[in-house]
Image 1 (cartoon, one colour):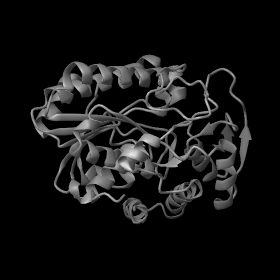
Image 2 (cartoon, one colour):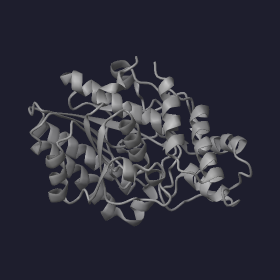
Image 3 (cartoon, rainbow, N blue to C red):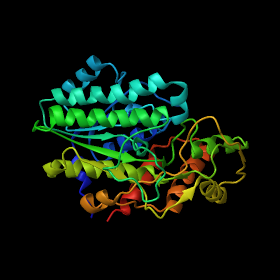
Image 4 (cartoon, rainbow, N blue to C red):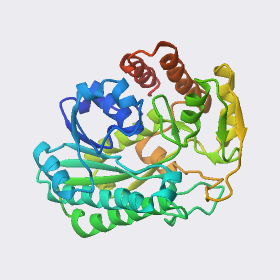
Length: 355
């Protein structure tokens, strides 16, 4: 099913976490669809960053505030009066969550609470998509893939913080928003997305690109870990069409949706490395297993609900996702050029695949 994405033209869209990896791609996509985008972030989390390389600091409106500051966040919401809200702001790194659990819980749980408070006070009509994580589920390492009704939980601080955010969303929806006719919300859960412009710490492909661009070996912690590898644009397309469906179908209000690759796409970290090596000269790695910190080996999402109701699917195969990602980094490291045009080109190539 092909959606009319031109419906976003001239719409006011507020994106939290817009300077991050996912947020910058979403901001760029919606801006190029003709939307008026307002981004809210604490800072620019990495150097370099896709946000800066795509010139988003000059192309959209930006507010640099802490989402845990309710007073400042509410002022942005009530002044901007968004038609759509996409909440992506988070401390999203598992390893960092072990070092800074308080920051992780405060940002991911209280930050989400504050967004829900802002939605509660809005008077205009607004569609909100709250992005959590595949790690919101209590990981029993089941093979069938996690469904939206499965139990939430978390062993590491990051996962627990996202599960906490989910409980806050449910509480606010059932206590305050379910009968608020001007607000509709949906929850989106995706996983380990890849794509150009990610320079986050302790992430496989960013670590590879940073090391290999300097002809250095990359350290691999968990080579046999299975992740739901998908391109960032596939996940973002899910968020976008969820918002459009929420607008036209009030029965979806309060629903959660998984957006993951096909369940038969079982690819390990080592499989990704072997594929990237075919596309990148001088790719080397060293395996040093981490025994101190828990990290799940098997993590899958069952996206049947999104496929059935939203008619969503991954439009890029595993191989295409890795190719898109590697080509972005290759262009960047070879040319050192502004990446706005190349990023838009990839969005356009992706859009051509939509049916």
